[in-house]
Length: 247
Length: 294
Ligand SMILES: Nc1ncnc2c1ncn2[C@@H]1O[C@H](COP(=O)(O)OP(=O)(O)OP(=O)(O)O)[C@@H](O)[C@H]1O
Ligand SMILES: [Mg+2]
Image (cartoon, rainbow over all chains, first blue to last red):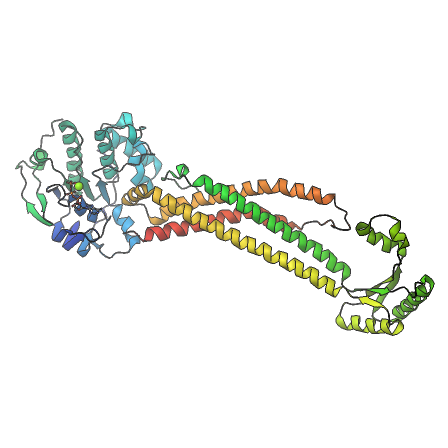
């Protein structure tokens, strides 16, 4: 697929690096305690753990919606723990986020939702039209491009959300339960999209409860429990290049 | 500022109609204040020009005898004409004195029978306290009973009144400006709260604070200018009505005044000023609110 090809804006070191990170909401308990973790460039991880373990919280640190209450966090080699707010937009433009609750903009069509990151980055409209159309075709929503999110089903919304997350060819893709609302066939198709982007050089982290899905891919698992992260080996042995997506 | 895209559904904002209406009212009030202030200024200038460098000498009736009075008048005029500081001195004809009193007393026989003092209009070569004092002294020598009015007290009181109007107008402007600013601050904060989730999404997909602030600023600019134009649209018939009512008043009491071009320029500038102020206020409000985020 011909997604937007950017000049390789290289950085040294890991895509994401956490160093003794702690996170708490207000005066609550620490959701994450002393987490040290490195997400290398061009890696693919699942993020697992019981509900309420802090998967969404961990991802929200990475997409800069929160700052760690302690410890250090680097994204693309840049220390974001204390980085001034004005630096954050540039970093956010290099990552794509799929929210567990989609967070589509209801006053815009599916097309405009997907186009948003490109337009905000000031990409030429002809390029926007081409890339967004292609991507909507890919996720099987070409006939819904003018539909507003309210009239879309959960699974359709999810696909729009994924398209929006990946449209600008981000170097880091953070997906929170991106296949929670679709059937197996579509889930596999969406996973293929993430795998393709991973092969093209993106680091991907997918938070999911879907064990069978995780078991089909040879990717390591970040397991969150009790505020701590452990890295577990892949459940599948098949190399990524040989996965049958069943298409 | 123009030609940027808008990702926020600001048009559906609940507060925006209220803002438009309020800007209209404020600009209407501001325009009235500007006009009243200008009108008073013009009147004053006219009066000022007509009375500076002039004196009015009043010779009371000598024992109710008009002839004796006329003799005193002639004597005073003679003295004045020979005085180096005086440009012109002439008796005001009785007909003109009654004419001056007509608007107040009405056009009837009462005036004709009134024992009126004689008046002498004096024009000085140059305006100045020294000239006034010198001329006053020579008149007093010639006719100790003469009452001399150099209009200064009258003028200073009228000036005081004009200054009062000026201060009131300025106060209205300050109040209008702060009311406009506060309206925009609160309306913008309400919008920010209403669209908090949309703004979060815009941030996540890479929008800068300035990008978001510009959308609010552009909307505020439009509201300020539109509301301002509506305010002027309300002002125009109000002015026309007042002008018509004023035209029916005797010009001796309410002189005709032509408002200067600067007055109309200021009026035309009000919607622009309202738009600009609203734009700046919205921009600063959004930037400040967003800077408190992560
Ligand atoms: N905004 C918030 N304010 C306070 N507490 C919060 C907030 N968001 C999450 N939490 C708490 O943080 C903990 C972790 O929540 P989080 O959403 O990260 O879990 P999760 O692993 O994503 O769960 P799930 O699998 O159900 O999505 C929970 O106990 C939750 O109550
Ligand atoms: Mg979650």
